[in-house]
Amino acid sequence: MIKPDGVERGLVGEIISRFEDKGMNLEKIRKLTIDEKLARRHYAEHVDRPFFSELLEFIISGPVIAMEWSGESAISICRNLMGATDPKEAAPGTIRGDYGIVVTNNLVHGSDGPESAARELEIFFG
Image (tube, helix red, strand yellow):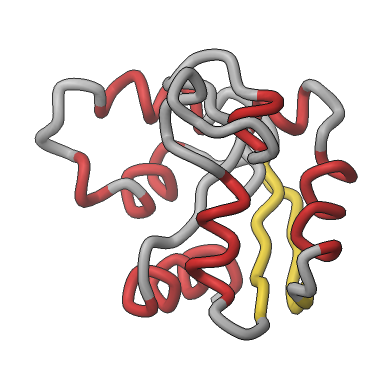
C-alpha cells in the first residue's frame, strides 16, 4: 500500500515502478480513502500499542493506493524494496531510504507474511 504521504507527495508512479523494475507483477490496484472502521480492522494487531491513535489518524488522513503484487518471493522482495520501517534506518536505494522522512509517515505498507497478506487483501479487495 502507498500511504497518504506517498500519494500526497506524488510518488505513486515512482513506487510502482520500483516494484515493476524488480520483476513484480501488479495484479490489483485500488485508490481509496480509508475510514476509521476499515483502519481499525487493518491495524487490529496494534490496538494496544501506544502509537495506535497516531497510526489511525495518519492512515485516514488522505487517499491510499492498495495493491496486490505477485512474483517469485513477492513478500520478501517487496519488503526489501520498501526498506526499514524507520526511514532514518532504511538503506539508500530503498523506498523509505530514498524518500522517507519520519517513522510515522513512512510512505508504504507491506504485508509481513502470507497470512497477513491474505487478511489485508480481503480487507481491501474483498
